Each structure stands twice: as C-alpha cells, then as structure tokens.
Length: 116
Image 1 (cartoon, helix red, strand yellow):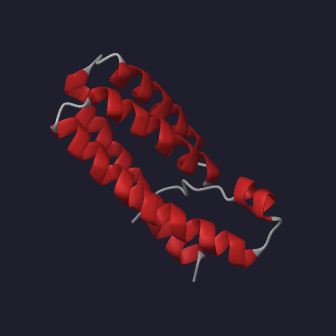
Image 2 (cartoon, helix red, strand yellow):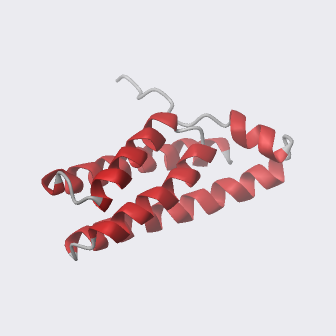
Image 3 (cartoon, one colour):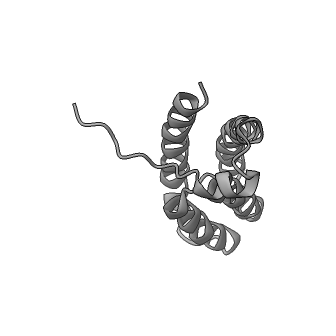
C-alpha cells in the first residue's frame, strides 16, 4: 500500500527553536492540541453560519499550519479566510473543513512518529 507523502516540514520549526528538541516537542504538542480545536471550532462556526468568525479562525490556524511547514494548506487557509469573510462559496465550506481536518490528522500522525 502506498503511503501518503509527508506533509509536515520541520525546517522552520528547527530554525526557530535552534534545533532544541525539547522546544520542538513542546511546539509539536501545542500544534496537535490547537489544530484539533481549530477543526472542531470551524465545524461549529460553519454550522452556526458565523462565516466572518470562521474566516478569522482560518487566519489564526494559518500560523500554526505554517510553523509545521504545511505551506500548501496555509495558502488554502488564506483563500478560505478571504472567502468566508465575504461569504463566498458557502456550499464548499464543509468540504474544505473536512479537507483541513484530514490533512491535520495526517500531520498529527507524522508528528507523533517524529515526537517519539
């Protein structure tokens, strides 16, 4: 079975932490708890039709995603942020939120392997 290509790139995190393994471990743990919360909150905001808040949350999530080197997802979050704030393409929000969650789950699995 083919494994998905790795989606995290810890180069930025390594540079930012000066290669300190404990700091990296702590940042990874923070990321894991944050993205799980972001995904849940995105779903809740979408269900409540609070689209501007959803856009703000996408903006907030973008920095966490960027730190883990997930540049493609960071770009997608930026686009999603702008669309949500303008309430454009509402019918696609749920699909994007599921995509976000799926990629974050994959990243969490990769990070747990790295963080052992």
